[in-house]
Length: 125
Image 1 (cartoon, one colour):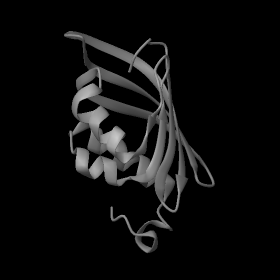
Image 2 (tube, rainbow, N blue to C red):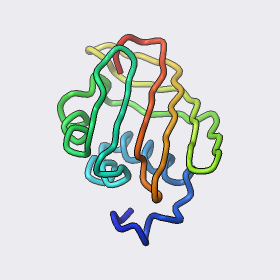
Image 3 (cartoon, rainbow, N blue to C red):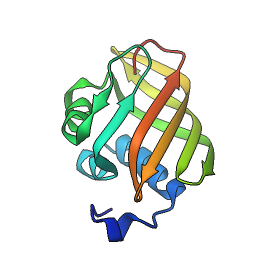
């Protein structure tokens, strides 16, 4: 997805968030980061917020405690420019296989994710 407002302004929130999960599972981090606004804010349970594309890129390259995994999406509910996602993540965390449920809320601006909130029963994701 391009970074220009004209290319992204009419983007379907469901399609954008599906693109996000596809990109993270395939470890296509440049594509993933392009789905977010320059001033993105990402909040996760029990951890500090991630602010801006560069912090987001660094998180996915070196700071993400989950690896070798995939997301199974159960539901996506869209209300205007907000998409709520419920699903299951299966992968590796700290060298051990894990599987857990998650709920994410993605708030879009001009077709890009501006804010993302993750909710799980885990201390760190």
